[in-house]
Length: 109
Length: 115
Image (cartoon, rainbow over the protein chains, first blue to last red):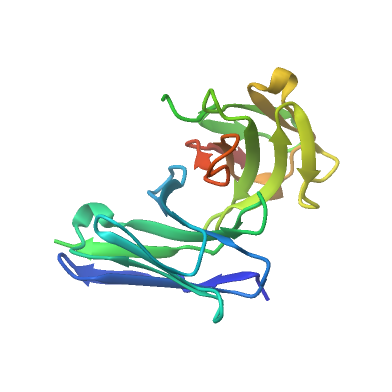
């Protein structure tokens, strides 16, 4: 079993919809949680970084962390076609990131 | 801020050949990481430098792989006697000292194809 599980999708939504992404993990030592966006054949781009349980909002993006359930989520409001990408969750106990497999999202115009 | 840069962007080689990739981190970042990503998977950690010291190597990094970071600036990743299973995207990331030092910023990657 992988340390980080992420539904690979694909996920297709109409423009303006809310995109909901999530990951579960098994390593209770993880305390830093990140979401990256990766366009095809490009490097991952850091979207959100959180340390504690709870919510963090940045523009149209909201990250949630529930350490008691070992579950993290990313919500994208008012989704745009430019949000079409693969979204990777990542987490760490120290400096080494453990990634999910990524969820491919398509936002239809 | 010019971001993390990697060269070459693409490399096609024949099985058994040696290849070397270069990573230039963001200038004020003292930590540098290498990851490998295969199709449909998330990146997997390979190795980590703090300044010029290589502090951890994953068991994924066989004896054919070697990484260096002379003078704590750019880093190179060499793969000797390449195998078809080495075909992947090799990603470099860097993070800064202090503060939110775990925010890792990735380069565009080097895509390796071993024929």
